[in-house]
Image (cartoon, rainbow, N blue to C red; front, side, top):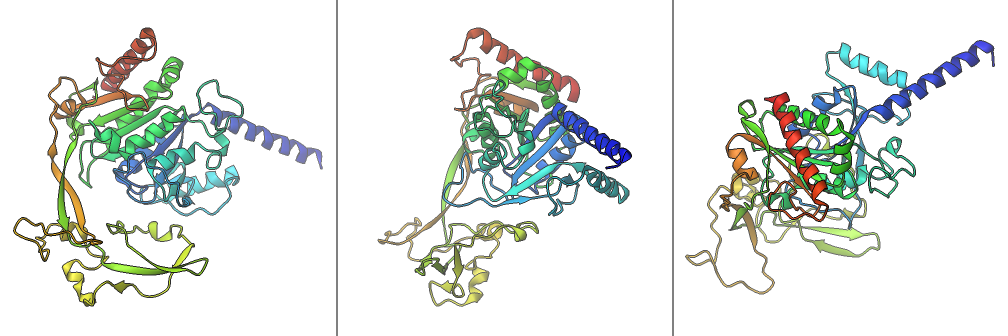
Length: 446
């Protein structure tokens, strides 16, 4: 090799080492959610955090909405993982079939090209998966998705002994709707943060107290940004908060936030209201398995959500195939779709109509025949009351951001009545960290 070529190669190697050192100094952030990869909450959070030069943002999110999935994990079937672009912009992720080790100069050219075309692009390595929010965190913290973040034999800062990736913070959200009270048990958003905490990370669950599809998440993400900066500003905070969940609920009127406080988790929970409904999917699919056995497989109780453009490209299971066209259980005509008998009917309209279920008496009940399947839907029947002072649901009503610090078994460290299994001194420090973070968020965002 010529002398000049050798010097050029050394210079390139030096630049690569500098880049690696720069990446090591960045704050490593993982973002997951339960509303799906295309939800407005996660889109706004990605744009807000990935623009910060000191942050390296990674994303693993469900390909579709998985709300109220709790801490469910997938063990009985494989999980499909789709690699998305290294660059995120407002419209959607673009497919990127290139290798992970693509030349850095090419990445820079792609970023510059996006800016020239008027697109707002930020660097963000990301994946969509067919699993749950807890699956998202579990996969991301393993060795396969982010191998560049594995720190070999370094367990001094957390208790993650799986040899997986290590993040400074794992953010889950921003969720559409609050996660206050007992809903922390049902919430896929809280579960995404809790799974990270179970692996020794700092989990932060973020929720906006609005179910509107057009809700504005900018204020919530501004608060999330300040929470991240507050946590990473102190090694003591990072050390004490590892293995814990910070549950953050933001009131719906972001521009009218009246304060930020730490609080206890309320005892409130949605009261179920079960209603009997017609069979939402009266079809049987005949399938054959690899061993040649054929059976009739019952459909799921509810149709899957409508597919987005990305969902149509998702991985499909190959273990079985449809042998014949879907067969009706009765001889009704396909025109029954208008009455809600098609698997493709609009559930939001269908369940608003009055259902005339045959063979029922005046009270809507009848003798339940052996082997008969009936269908029920859970509706909103109100909320349990909790009149204690300073709880999360009450703070939201007052227009305040509610911050609770939870253990992985949902014990609330910011509840004044909680008895700690740790020393009183350390417990007091954790409480004070919560108060300090709330104050810093208030000073920065209000």
